[in-house]
Every structure is written in structure tokens, then in C-alpha cells.
Image 1 (cartoon, rainbow, N blue to C red):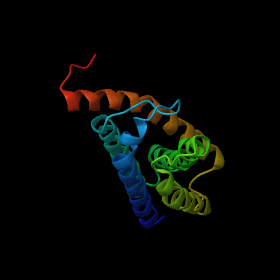
Image 2 (cartoon, one colour):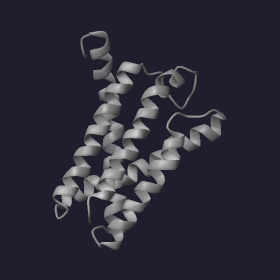
Image 3 (spheres, helix red, strand yellow):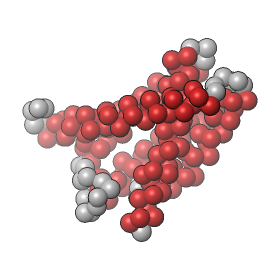
Image 4 (cartoon, rainbow, N blue to C red):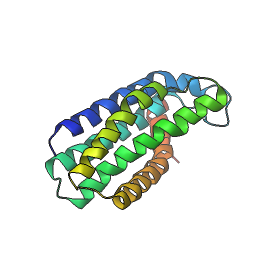
Length: 164
């Protein structure tokens, strides 16, 4: 696979994360069962960590496409960002009847670009459905586990409070 899919993935996730970094902290301050309030500092730290990991996975795959670990990490990010466009962004927007930051970039960038990259990976026979599903679950669960940790670190950095 050539480098274009990796570049487009990086562009899509970056623009998506910028949209969230700008508007999600303020949006999260509204009372909602879908989102705990998060400060700009803690959210931006977490989104930078996610973006760095996404770039590492993408460039690892571009550099070593024969590596199963690189392939699974990249495919997991692709799948996770597709799921992320639907849940929470689309579902929360529909249930609350209020725009959830990240929805537009998720649906217009992450969903089509990541689907295109996955289709290219299938066409190249570099991934199977089983690998895609398992890697999406693995990366998705990993990110859901790490995000609260990154929020806590981001909160500490922003406020200079000791980390518990």
C-alpha cells in the first residue's frame, strides 16, 4: 500500500481532534448523562496523546506494512475512529438534539476516509475481517482505558495539583 492512505488518515484524525479540542470542553460543561465535564487543559492533553498514538500507528504501518503489530494497531485506529463517529458523536447528537462536537468531522472525514483505507487494505489482502474487528476492539478498549488517565494527567499539568 502506498503512503496516501496513511496521510489521509492522519489529516482526518487531526482535523477531527482539532474540532473536538476547540468545542468539546465547553460543550461538556452542560449537564448530561453522556459526558462528564472536562476542562480544556485535560481534554487537550488527552487528544494530543490520542493523535500522537494514531500517527505512530499510521507511520509504523507505512514503514513496516509486513509487521502484524503495526497493521493491527493501524487497523484498530481506523475502526475505532469509524465507531467513534457513530458512538458517541451521532448517537449523542440524536439523543440530546444538540450538536456533539466532532460529529461533522467524524461523519465527513473519519467515516469515509477510514472506510476507504480499510477497503484498500482488504483489496491488498493485508487484513481480514477478523483482524479488523479484533484490532478495533483492542484499540478501542485501550483508548477508553487510557483517556481517563490522560484526563487526570492533563488536569494535573493544567492545575499543578499532585496526581493521586
